[in-house]
Length: 537
Image (cartoon, rainbow, N blue to C red; front, side, top):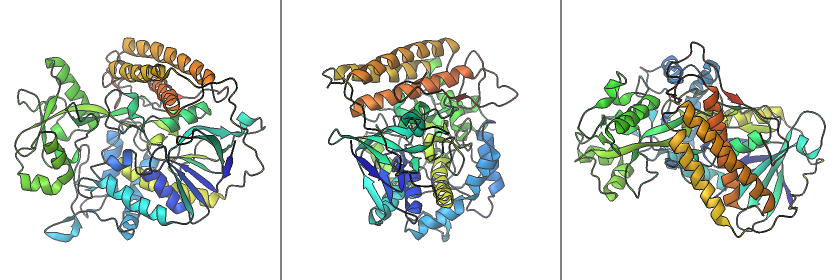
């Protein structure tokens, strides 16, 4: 088995990973790994923008207050304040990099700020309606031009390597990661004193999601297998407005559309969200998604409508050019008629316990972006705070690592990957069947509205599937599909276990058997003593 060395290993090339890599490159050689192409990931598909205090009439205190209120008591004020206060410097840096945000036509000195659900002010900067793409394209171009950054695509992380797994005494320390080269089928190791997990989300654990196919929860699953604490995994945010169309399974209609006056109405034309919250269509996502789910179940409707037909086509084409054109391609003219929408799994507010500087419980291992639980989002993410978190935490983590000056690990050998008696599989249908079953179970039993009975059913079935995967994993040579299924089933179990732990309804977690919110907010933490890279219980 080959072992490659790098000063810094960054797993994931989304906004958080790119930001960390660009700032780490001033201090050594960076290996930036993506499981497909470097461009692919959740960050690229972020339409709305970056929440940041830029208006003189706005304030840090108001942004902090909005975030804490949306977080349902589980957000940690210190983390919230650090991220919110760090935003302006990161926006200035992006503009120095040549990434521009929309300005007001009547005053080019002022930003054209959007407003989204849960925000008390207009504070969302945007680059048209393709903010994520603009950020990724701009930062990726800089990374490709940086001589200290090496980009590696089609490498799928298998497991991080703690020193305890290779028999070294003392506190576990991460010394690198095993990878599968999806092009060659080769398994190899990367040895590094610093491993940064920036692997993104886990939306593919659900049957319907706004996430791309790469969002299979790899980082969370690897950290859990390594024995790290995983927090608040039951807090899965369902985006209220994904386009309802058989050919548009992951097409999200930005919350910014509601910020510009779009209303959610049922199929009878009634603006129903006011029945659930006085803010109506600008209520936070947890409330809005549950309102839609309730109306659909009450009337047996397959969707509700998002109506912005009171705005003319010229405005919509200017403010949402990509979205408007895409809807037209699916047969919907937003300027003429309401658009059918449904909720879909969108964002994981829980993850690996980490601070704003990326530190986890294991020296040498850092976590940033959606894979991390920093205390920012709590029980529900405030719209457009995710790109802000990626930028600020990516930067802060790089500064923390540089100040830490981690020692070399070249004297530690990573053992060769053991194939044992494994052979090639001719039963790929088993993997596909289990993949579909995990996602269906999660959608049916662990969705927007839960119950103790549904969670028990889900736990039983997911554990059975995980046993089948363990057996398959030992007997056959690993493939990319098998590794992703293994991770998907692991995060599914984490979500279910966390949901069973929470005997209340709070934020994104709503349980019909526990509809009240407890007086004291508590985190749900799952941490298991690992027996090695194969088994976690």
